[in-house]
Image (cartoon, rainbow, N blue to C red; front, side, top):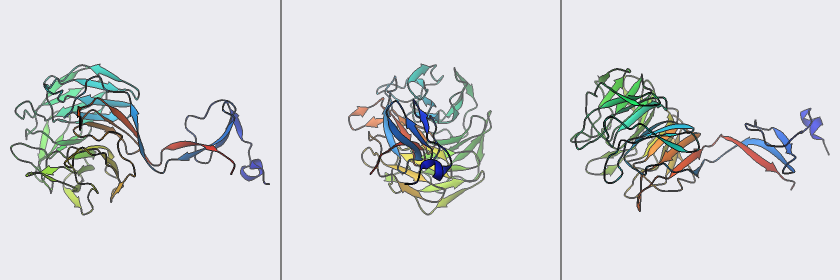
Amino acid sequence: MAEYINIRGQNIEVVASDPANPTIGQIWYNSTSNTLKGGGVTTVGAWATANNMNTARFELAGTGTQTAALAIGGDTDPGSPGATEEYDGNSWTTSNPLIQPRNYLAAAGIQTAAVAFGGYTGVNPGATEEYDGISWSPSNNMNTARRQLAGAGTQTAGLAFGGYTTTYVAATEEYDGTSWTSNPTGLNTARTQLAGCGTQTAGLAFGGIIIPVVYQTATEEYNGATWASNPTGLNTARGYLKSAGIQTAALAFGGYTGSPSTATELYDGTSWTSNPTGLNTARYNSVGAGTQTAALIAGGQIPTGVTAETEEWTGPGSPLTKTITAS
């Protein structure tokens, strides 16, 4: 029988604990568990339950990463507290609330430099606020005051699109860290309760609702000037969904199709692929953040009411440790 050292040119390393970030094909012997292990990658994504938010709510916004996320505003039924919470990859910590409490808003940026915009307080205020990791400060209002919109980008290069005024809209605006500029060409499919991700010059819009209620599969890409419709839309038409990632590597999850959905889909810049398994808890009107390989969902509406539940996503292509057994 061929020996490993003759095949790979090295001995198998003996360690007391598994490497934190193993490479593909790396082999080691764990002396604590007395098992031979190897590094690989996942082929199918999966959601895992994490620690709950402090305030159960829905119709909120989120931004950031799986290990540094931000949950903003929302309803607690009744009431709109404007609560802000930070997630560190393990637990949620309550921070300073929005200056103008509201629901159905959108957000962009990172945990320490975010921008929240639009929303609903009984009217559509069009309010914009910036977060520095501690507190919120007011900025200039949007040109088209609206709710149930989507956002993308950063605090100094944000993007807002779609939403609802007295009807669903296609309006697109760009934020430079101070003020909003309206783009004369909006979405090709005007809609509300859609999702979005990416950057100001490479944005992605998908899903949503037109009125009377028709759930959408429509997917559009933004190049910093105009939106282009992709003839291949979502596999599951829905509104009230959430997103993570960038234009060429996006993730769509949750939403509403007439009932709360667990559906999870991956976008490669061309088409959507449904993941074999979806969320553990079907929900909509939640918060989403992260990337296609490491995303987060929290809060939202479920069949029994409002939840504080959090789930973390590990996508295909993520590092994986496998125990090697003889057959």
